Image (cartoon, rainbow over the protein chains, first blue to last red):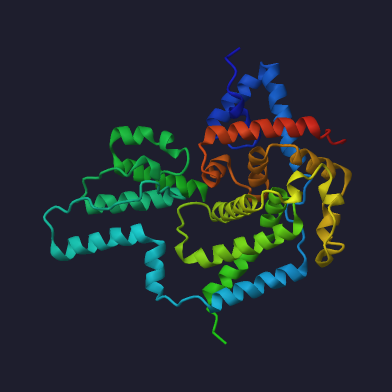
Length: 185
Length: 177
C-alpha cells in the first residue's frame, strides 16, 4: 500500500476539486486503504449535511424592495464616466498592451522593449485570456516570444504547462491553449 | 429623475440575484437576522458602487462574497457583545422575531429536524472553520477561491475545511435513505 496522502488532499477529493490524474491516483489508493476510505466517507457526510440548508433562503419581499430602491438611488447618484474610461479601468493591462503596440507601429521602433506589464498577482480566468496575453507579448517583442509570468495561468494550469515552458516554445503553447479551450467548449 | 442606463439595470439585476445566498452566509456569520438583512443590502450596495473598479481577474462570485465576508467581520468587530454571537444550537428556531419579521418564509424553509441539527452543528464550529464551509456552500467557491477571499494560504483553508467537515459528520446523524 502506498503512503496515505495528507488529510487536506482528501478534502479536495471529496469536494470533487481535483484534476483527473490526481483524482485517479487517490482512487487507486482508496481501493487498498480502509483508513482513507473512512476519512473520505466522513468528509462526504459533512458535505452532504450542508445540503440540508436552503441554499437560496427566501427573503422578505420588503427587504428586496428596499434593496432595489437603494440600488436605484445609488445608480442615480453615480458620477457619469465616458464609456472609454470605464473600459480602460476594467481592462487596464490589455489597454496598456494595445497602446504599446500602436506606439511601436506608429513610431517604428527598431526593437520595442517588452513593456507589457501584467500585475504581479494577475491570474487569467480562462486559457483564452492566457493565449491572448501570449500573443500580445509575442507581437510586442517582434516575435521572439517571451513567455508570460506563470502566475497568469488559471489555478493549477502552470504545472500542467511546464513542459511547454521548458521547451520555450510559445507557439506550441499557444496552439495547446487554444485547443484546450476548444475542447472545453 | 435621472435616466438610468442599461449597465446600471443589468448590474442591479445581477447583484440582486446574489441576495439570498449572501444572506444565507451572513445570517450564519453574524447570528442575527435583522443584521444579516442590513449587511446583505450593504454588501450589494458596496459591490454596486465598486462595479466600475471590478477587474475580471477573479471570479465575480468570489468578489461579492469577499465583500460580504468583510462586511460581516467589520460588524462583528464593531459589535463584539452582540447577544446573537453566543447563540446556541437551535437559534434559528428560538431567536425572538422582531416586529419587522413575523412569520418569515425562510424560517419555514430552514425548518425541519435535520436542518436544525445542521444549524446547531454549524454553530458549534469555531468561526473561521464555519466560515470556510459557508463560503463553499453559499458562494459555491472552490477552496482556491476561498483562500483568496479569506486572504489565507490554501493549506490552512483546507485544514479548516477538513476539521469542520469531520465535526459536521460527527454531529449530524446520517440521513436515513
